[in-house]
Amino acid sequence: MNAIVVACNSVHLGFLGAYGNAWIETPNLDRLAAQGVVFDHHFPENLTTLPTRRSWWTGRYGFTDPDLGWTPLRPDELILPDLLSPRGVRTALISDTPFLRETGMGYGRGFDDVVWIRGQGYDPFIPADDPRVKGVRLEDEPGLRLPPEDEDDPDSAERWRTRWEQFLRNRKAMGTDREENTGVARTVKAAVDWLERRGDDPEPSLLWLDLFSPHGPWDLPDPYRDQYATIEPDEFESDDEGDLLDDSTDDEPEIDVEDVPVLIDVPAGAVGDVIGEAELYRLRRTYAGAVTLVDRWLGELFDALERTGRDQDTLLIFTSDQGEPLGEHGFVRRFRPWLYEELIHTPLIIRLPGGKHGGIRHQAIVQTVDILPTLLGFFGVRPPDDAPPIHGRDLLPLIRGEQTKIRDYACMGMDVEEFAIRTHVWHMILPLVDDPEEPRRPELYRKPEDRWDQNNVIEQHVEVAEHLELTLRRFVEALPREGLDELPPVRDVARRG
Picture 1 (cartoon, rainbow, N blue to C red):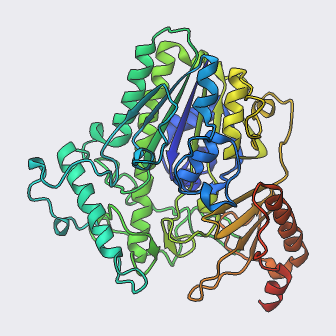
Picture 2: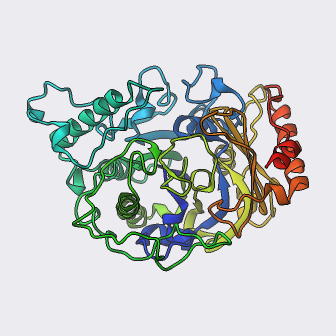
Picture 3: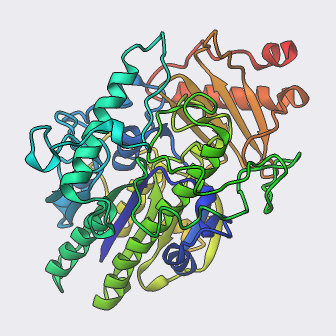
């Protein structure tokens, strides 16, 4: 038996057909969803990129501990390949995510095979003195924009200039403006090559395919860049109840692709500062093209599995580490550790070998920590008796219909600055750090009516908020780190308005 995990970076749930989008083409993921089990309530526990990989590979909660955030893997942390390799499962990591291979971080350790695909994003790959990049200048690229001057971060402009100069060098030297040279294309091709080299090898294997896309920069080749530029529906306008509208509204700016140039990338920031309203609508459509590009190349992987017959003995998991804020709450990218739906609600589709139990949607609340125990259960591997306890749960009994749920709520956090608790009916956000310039107070949203967290109802449901706060406190206190006293009292905050 074999397993493949396809882990993408920054997939906005609202851009996938399997999760309700009607205008973005994702036929291959739609096919996977039809053959697999779609989990409608999947959430991370610790955001963003590296913390989520730790969640995936350890099966343990870490959102209450700053030492378990964007930090190196400790040598004594037992991770997924450490558990599988001694039991005869060959493990491979193939990735173009540049953060994973940063020196000293240790996110490639333990795997039997590791293939790094270089040149994605701001990967420091092509040096400035490379003759292939002579004459490359940031000033010649209108799709990149330096952030506005920030008194609190005077180095931000220079930091973004350095990143984007590196990005332009990578693009020029490697020709990543052509589809076959994009990071997602090269990474999927490397995965297919690895699978074909294995052939009919009876040794069980796990392939972890870690894709940087559709994370920015969004420098898309034709036809993906402009594929959705003139599409009318906008999936982010909400009515008074928070439901998404199918038709454009009177407030939506008229989009003319010739008048609003493509923004390849923007710094994380507020709409109005780093990006205008019309540019924001254009950026969303560019991002939609990035999602379709990812889907097109995942189709190559799925086709290879079917062509070789490995789809009959392979467990296939598709997921993402985080969403992608695109203006729903007035900012783009991970500008603040604000745990709104567009960031925390992520896809999870699991296809069993041969598509068994496929074609259903599951309503259980599941989290990133559940991936490791699910893989262990699939391979029949038990962790050593002296190993740290695994917090996640095996999802296979849910898929087989042996259980209906594994938890009543999901708790999560980001940078130990904001926590949240999510149930089927409620989403509560608890800030731990209050910025005087942008004061944060606890917020409460009703689900599923208010899909994108537009209507804060905490003043109308104080008792609900208090109960959720208490539940979250108890959850935090049960973890190895002591509970945090600075969680604000919800009743007082609600009464102050």
